Image (cartoon, rainbow, N blue to C red):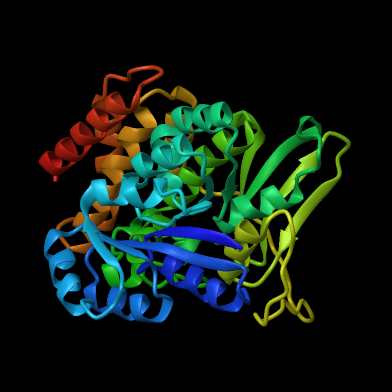
Length: 379
């Protein structure tokens, strides 16, 4: 039995992780649940899962939960200190990092320090601190198993000898605005941007998918996870979202992983690896389906090009890009800026940043803070 700490339990990936736990027939146990401030859902999860520990980032939410859950034998903590406690516990084998945003970096590093396996669903962790995280994982010999569907696909396609890989191909649905002109994109509303054609996700990642920043973040994540040069990481628009990604080998052979648009599949694989468990989830039926692939539009969706540039430059620039993006997407969700201003503002912040190479955690957090502040100033 594997014992988990689940970071981000009330989010989309977190909720689906708990679906996997319930279907695992006793092979998974949850020690701790961590979330921001969704008190109602956390209470529901606590009563269903019965963890030993709950952590809420929000102080008020933690206080309210203590009162609501006083009848249960569990502990409620708050803030980053509580999150760190949840991931370093000796009772925990694996930490599922499904928090949204850069906030996942610190607990991931703490979990690695404590020798925990990481099921990584928080791409911003590797975008902001990929060099730091991967070197730490290697030093302590702790595995990082990807949960993102695209990176799980690549992970599943890898052979025992990764030196035979020639190219990684990340697929992208293209989001709701695939094929739109810049003039058409100028009229995008929040409501339109939140209508993803294939996946049901949280608001932030849905907007990132609309701008294709999400795919840019995944390019940087793939670089760190698989040690691939950016010149050998390609993005393919695949509107059907059936092929989750592909790997091309040096002899020209291409392996692809296909599946339903169901995050429970890569979540389960990350938690069952190196074995595969049966489950009752819906199976993929390819009969009657047509699969198409297209070049991405770097001009219409400049966030993808910006991510390649930031990744190639490295240092603190990816962290700055990610932080600025988090700030401006939050502003867009509050209808304070237009759709096109998201990408324009992130690019402006990146252009103003003085990049620091080989940053430590403190330098990454300082760059992150500066980028958020500067983005808000520009807004």
